[in-house]
Image 1 (tube, rainbow, N blue to C red):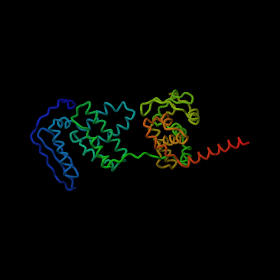
Image 2 (image 1 turned 180 degrees about the vertical axis):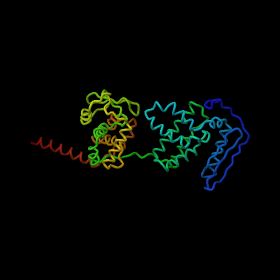
Image 3 (image 1 turned 90 degrees about the horizontal axis):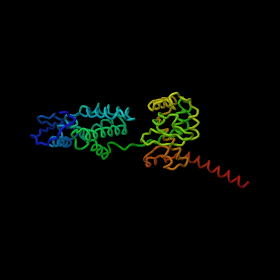
Image 4 (image 1 turned 120 degrees about the vertical axis):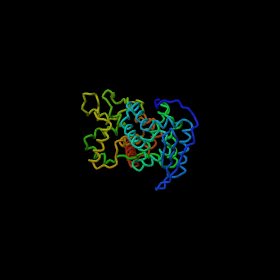
Length: 352
């Protein structure tokens, strides 16, 4: 029978033989054996965790789920999802990279032993190598794939173990909430970047506060005078934005390409070029996306409201824009100073 399709039959099997062995490291290994089923083994920090995992395997076998889940490996599920759904995504390169990582670490496991404990252990190991944000994205990808397998392919799981693992990781603070970057380029750094070959592109990114993927696919026909239509966005919600005078000057100064593209560069190539030119200018810890943060912050510093800024940047969640209101005090002071001088000048004229 095709391992992706089965009819679940609940039967009572002979008693399970679960054994527990204390290892030299102090950890405990649980081994579950039953005739007609592949044996399952996992190592845990405590005997209590090992016993809890073994009971979960026992329950899955008794309820007829283990047979289906034990026939399919995590790697097979990942591969099937990648083949079916990943090619159509704009984020396919990044998703393929995450699937490759998940396959390397978890691919050989039968789905029957992809337990919350196994996932928590995986994340603990990953956090020794990568940042929390990377581990969180891998966890999200795995959860989506398991959900898809449960809904479409009857993989033999009642509950998505990744969801349970997420709750444990957050409750125990093992996976800390992501910290939003507040990095903005300094005037000195911008002056250094102004000497780079891609400066018109970097300045345009600031002036428009667009995402790199939106800039990369921009075409000449998307512009109409002082407005720009952005048909392809991260949120799949097209938008039209006003162009600043400087943004229009940048566009007007570009040579027209025969293929209709404005910039003729991919999003990934933009990231590489920005990193390369930052290194050449001795600028540390500045990322391409920080230019979008800079552009968004400047809009707030001009006195724009959250709805007005969201219409330009494409933020669907207005609450995420609250962090942009942490404005640079020195820039605000300079702005207030300029306003004061203009008011004084008007007063002097009226007095005269």
